[in-house]
Length: 339
Image 1 (cartoon, rainbow, N blue to C red):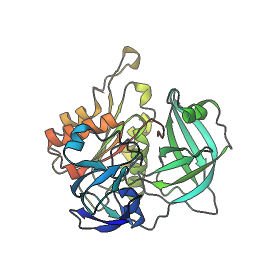
Image 2: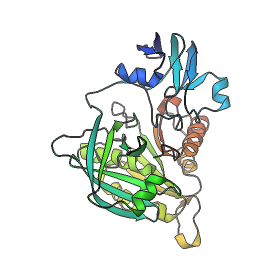
Image 3: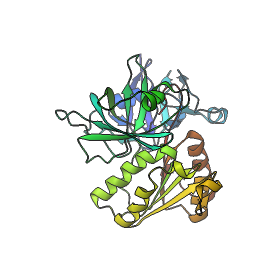
Image 4: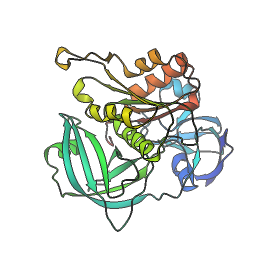
């Protein structure tokens, strides 16, 4: 049995089988809904059921009681049980970039911080890998599990791919990266995945908001802007607990000299005497509120933990007038299918 799905306010329509998630059906129909983890944990695919019934399957940890009470659902975890009318913003048509499964070779491992490893992967020369700045890949593990990581380099770099991996205590894959992975190891991945990325048809001033290794997709976006000669105003707020967490601080500072209209604001939430820190402190999105109390004409692109994303979305829209549809996010989750 299949059901008709209608999306508002865009008016797009597609069919969904009863055993498909709404996200799966949309992607199969060539429509890209905002999404991230595809496991119900990040909340990027959250939308409202205006008419009809859905059933949640699998994990839906990003859907709170308040969301359920107002008719919200997660498109990656919801299956249609009737024809549906859904509220889904920022829906795009799938472009000409195919999703592939490819092998890659570990070319270089660099410990950028005690708990951050930069992995450079060599890609097959015979099969070009294309992606958009802000997207991610899934490593395909031998037991069928996946681990997701954002691509940290710009798309014009075709022969290699850079990833930033944070050590998760008890995390089998990340502990392997830090303790056992070697240069020349062979891995398999699928990508590109995700809908996060700069909306290049807009000229609105951009706020880039990163927490920890949420810096990785932001780095891809900024380096792409440098490569294309963008003159769009951008301000990067990068938050970390301590100074070592700003593991590419010098690189971010260098962008101010390279990219016109670019500004960088580092923020530490737990600066100690050992950090010798004289810059901004507190929660990173609070620094945005202090500097930019009127965001009504801006776009915000946020990458970090779900808690950071939720707080930023709530406070920036409520206190700074940021339109809901101008907040774009990629939440990094660290669970069974962690990034």
